[in-house]
Image (cartoon, helix red, strand yellow):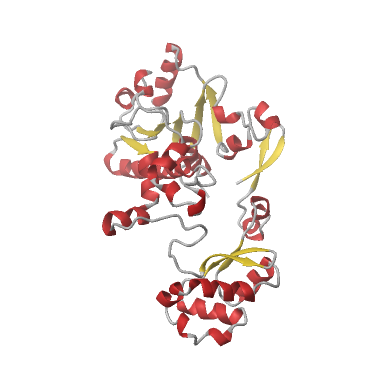
Length: 350
């Protein structure tokens, strides 16, 4: 099968994560992505967590989001390099960059210049705060956006203070947003024959990912607080529970699931208890409900209980490490992890 973006050429000036994650989506889907780097390479080639790979310029994180891309080194401070870019732009469909606002324009490679060379060009700029506004030219990384967006006030437990997500969610969110925006611009070009400037901001993107939480405040004035491992539904049976020698996450959100849970843990005697008649009552007595659930599941392992509950159609999940998740038979069935060739042998990447 022909991949959906086969024949689409991207000049990829992106670095770090927010930009490269977006161009990676296109590379996976068949686009010819030419990654343009300085002579020393993208900074994330030098990974601190795996020094032996970092010294090779192939840090695991770099490889993870660079599969199917080609590389070209250019010193963009030299006029010759700028001319090479302008030559390449003639046959390109997309230029994608995530420099600080204004950098490409100062290099003479802004949208206004390149679109004159190729009117069909789609130019995507990814930045912390977008191409316009009082923060447009300020330096930005994932942590700053997680802090400013309100995300950190939702994560973790109240006793521990605000907490970042365990991965670069602001970067990845902007990458996905950029990929969808550029794909939309490509589709629109089929009707208009014209390119356009696509302006992607990490700040905007993360607020958009948190649309439900933002609307809770803007519409209802509700300030969401940290709620640990609880579900955004706030239902007491959608949380992390102590099970045997570990933990299990339950995602019990409907009446049918709730009563199936009681039966599956051997507490049929609780089915008609008035404390559990509806979600308001269950929430009011959530401490007692937790004690019943955890006492019933005190014997046995999380995996044993997971198997038993899933067999009873009670949604739950084992808490796996990344090492365990990568060995999961469901991922193997769907070929999520694949072998990729490097000069140093095969590596397994998502």
